[in-house]
Length: 180
Ligand SMILES: [Mn+2]
Image (cartoon, rainbow, N blue to C red; front, side, top):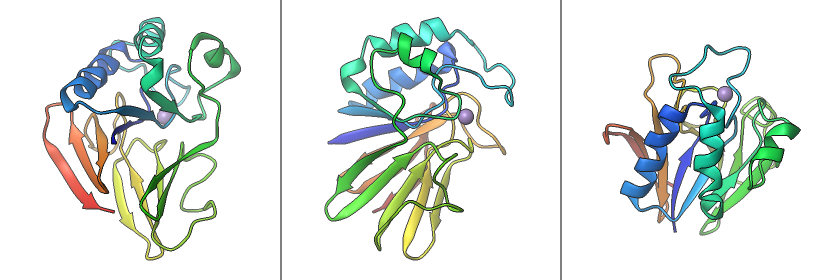
């Protein structure tokens, strides 16, 4: 199973289109979204091509491919317009005996860990900054943001296949690689 992992689209149709093009090019099997899908949020400027209705149409057209968790910008009204569940606090992926705890990052993060066993992974978005931090007993990973990257990071996403994570930007450059 090849996963494409992305976060924090924030209603940008321009960057959502790039994400879905990458999903096709990468020939991934499923798309994992780590929240903040439609609304730009009061802390952010409007991203390029802000058009939530277009993002709704693009994502609903591929709802069978999507696994999504709730961001701090998701509200009940977002669930009314999206045809796949977006209000779960977390989702779990398993790679061998290791568990990847997927969440947005505003509830569970390095400061407030979910229950993890040695070697598990905490995967979240929210900061808009890509991360691959080794904390000894667990690793914290972040794909960064699709539309509003912060601290000089890139517009991009992550891949997970056969226990290997790859961070990429939308120009197709590999930014980082890591074995689970
Ligand atoms: Mn966000």
